Length: 402
Ligand code: ATP
Ligand code: MG
Image (tube, rainbow, N blue to C red; front, side, top):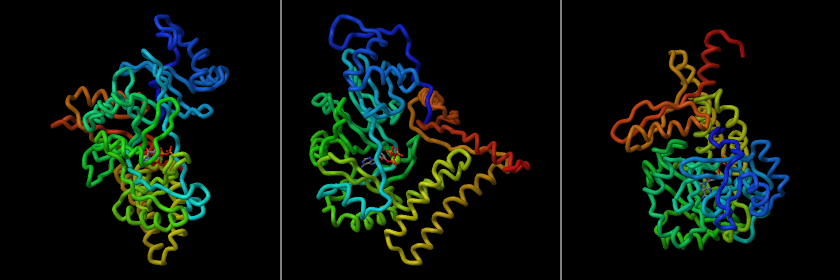
């Protein structure tokens, strides 16, 4: 999602000097003199990024920060340099590459063992304590008011952060009352959080798998499921079976990780996950169709090949794929023909109408067209419009040429 929330740098912004207590430093000097040392980037690189708008000043929900919009060298997009009593760097969550073919990739990529975790389908959240407040950052590095509140209700993280102020909790917000990606999980229901990584501030170094799980257990914090630790040479077949079974339960897939977390993780997803993303995308074909389409179809081709499917299984896959494209599109065309608009309703839990308005303001700041439809019994229905889909379909229905 694109955002207008981070602002351009105010020329005159001073804050407490990171090393020289009691004295002040301007934001401009901080970027030219201090930030290069902190991020191990050149002053030149940072100045250029600032000019291009790749770095923005962020000030929201009581946090002043420098937000990295696009990756610069090793520094990931979504990195936040939080400015307060001390400077704290919350690095962006690294991209996870995908395998199309498990067998050849796993042996090449991993050491002798692979830790297999379930991949949960929700949205990525980093939680850290900054300036004595526990805050939740979205992938792009925005503080999300809803997520911050819910994460703190779902988990008691005080003690964890008291003992480990330098750690960051990375996890997935999942469930049906999820304003970004709504999916039902029987063990979660409306809203839940599952932790997949614990990382260090600044270095972004993740804890090894077993150490992470032990630490989370100590503090009663909920991890994602560890599906097993496999011998790399035997893993591909096992993983194909597991992913097939996850798919049958409409679950998304797996993330394969080096038990020591020294090698980049890889992801692999189920056919049902591809279908449900196509279904979503083709409900709003002119807003999402193109961006989703090609990659999902390619995944299906390689998965069908590697699973060595029978004719019956291939037919089933083809049917699932075709239906997930055609039916939702047709439904939307009918809707527009009926003078309605392409829109999706998100449901969130709120304590007051103001909270719903606040969330909508936040969505709008990300460039999303949304309005509050109703607030009733602690639930707010928020309608998100897919404008291009409505406009284009209506144009074609009225005789426009493609
Ligand atoms: P990318 O991570 O490549 O930018 P993306 O944002 O489209 O891709 P996904 O395709 O959903 O995201 O895959 C990566 C995401 O999966 C992670 O960013 C994380 O939010 C989520 N995830 C769910 N379960 C896990 C897990 N067990 N380990 C790591 N990530 C997980
Ligand atoms: Mg995801």
